[in-house]
Length: 472
Image (tube, rainbow, N blue to C red; front, top):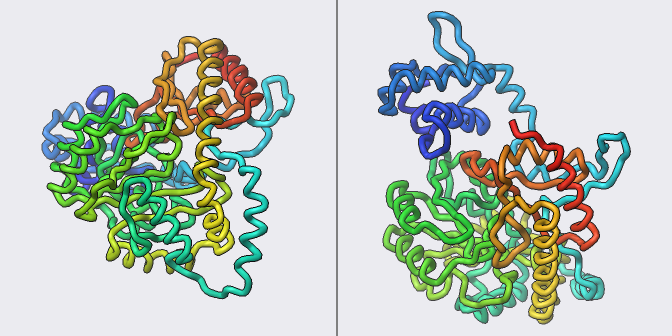
């Protein structure tokens, strides 16, 4: 493989943690996992890569040695270092997306051999509101003999979403709305529209794993700025945007996943100014914006968006019900027109039944939102008390909204611990799966949307697992 091409595929490899050679080795692993470097590919010579990266040859030698020791690469005397075919095949056999790991078997074996039901803190799936049953029945009867597909969405629903966003401070007409099958499809359509292999995206770190999966599927190069849960490093954001010249910026305005952070007004102003000055589209994922605790309007990144530079993604799946796969994209009319072409290829249009249900929900949405916020606020406080009582050494910032606590364990590796926790019948999301560079290895994401009995039992199981965990 050419040295210049290898350097591009490694990306901003030096921004990680650990010794320099470890960061370099880790960057190679990431490229291999995402199949940017394939089985049997030869790596540049130690000398050539050292010159290209402006580092010492000994650093490259150590990095290559680590890859060989861990079976990522192999070499014979006098020949080039090559990617290990067996390792590459092993990776190919594994499901590559984090989102695909949502589906898990319901039963696990405890150490004593007894089977039990998994308590899953890794996925947030709000229960269906009681009033939705009647709404579904009414919506089906209203459709009658309608035979249309409506690729952009039911006209009445597009209008309802436009009215809703306008009331939230984002002046919108129905021609600026594309209805999607959940926000995940919205992210995928945006990715297909903007990205070719090697294009850059500026993104928060950590961030929503579904977005990472979508961008990696397009083989984009991800450039990060840090999201600490306490604020956005605006100087880091500005450097990333101006240095990378990205195809777009992706971030969440409210209830950031996984930290629960709600963006401040001063941050909104600076972020929008930088994007507008550089002509960089700003993708604002606002699927959790209705779950700010307590509610607070004006946190959207699309307010006063006269340039049409900001694209908003929204959804009913998080505030109403996960089974209601209705999301939307709010963008300039010409962008919606081009996105609709990709929507037609994807599915010809989202389910008419789901859209009819969503249309009937909008008049009751404020009531549903208030009930959901009240429920989540109480459960967030319950989980916090349970953790403080049973796992006092764990740390987290109280989230300003959303579904999750972003926890830091005092030692060890969160991924290794999550595997042990699973054997105790509880699932948590390790921070590395929500990280661009496989960082945040001491973080866990945990939902507090479970019922109270599951919260209590789950924490007891986690505490038991933690008492047996032996950090390497």
